[in-house]
Image (tube, rainbow, N blue to C red; front, top):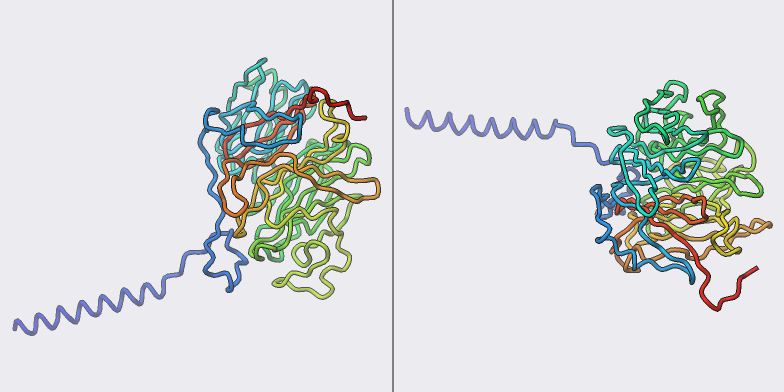
Length: 415
């Protein structure tokens, strides 16, 4: 009897074991993170992954601002802190308030300049990636993935309730690469990009991988550019009024990979290559198409592989030397999808009348090693203040830096 009971128990145990194995085999594997999409078999063992953002406040005393290096006569100082995840900035009409969007943390901040010190408050919280902020005619516009809010007269009325304009802007729902940088152009129109919902793929619908413009109330939608993988920064040339935009290159293409781009829209309707063609007419190895680069608008400048090219601002102030007039200052937040770091700086791009470009360093020192990731800051966006100083947001520290210039003593003024 005892042997019979033991045999039955053993059989039951084996049956349970086999059932568990069968269930585990039938159970679907969890989906890979979105950032791994497009990872080739040859890089299957790669440990590369996006850097986790520091979404807590960094005290000013913990920010090594003295490590930043700038050209002679320029100075970097901490202008504001207490903005975890701070990215794009929009300046109020009088320059006394700066509104700052975020991506991961879901907030929009208001920074008030109170003559020698700054205070920070949260305008709105718990939105889905409200990276896009723009300011025009006394109103703040906030763009999240699935919501557009307008705050009329907010600079003088902190408690103003927003107007919900979401329905008028026809927002696609996918989140991947769909956070936004938004700005009003010289024509008074509101410009909005919609990134590809993947690393590399044919978008599921035509509403992605494009840049649009609207009237301020959301009417008059017009598609200006297609084939744009992920533009999260643009500005207009002060003389030509042409729109220049940055665009992130695809991941998982090795350290040399496909570079980020600086592009130009001279007229509506241009196709910029994604997903079939990259950089200066190089077909994609995974998403193939006959004559992949035929008719593609080539970039004005390649900005470096995986540098995360973000904000761009054409300088028009009077504080900096004359050589900086109409120069594009561009923040490169810094790479993750390459073994050796790239970016983590702000560069100055001079665009000649003949279209030729030159690039030189403007702010360096955010990463302390050329061969490894030892960064303490990640510059993201730029804003010009009424006095001609430049503000630089740092998403890693949640701070904003003020860049000013004073001619070194004994140096003649350049004409």
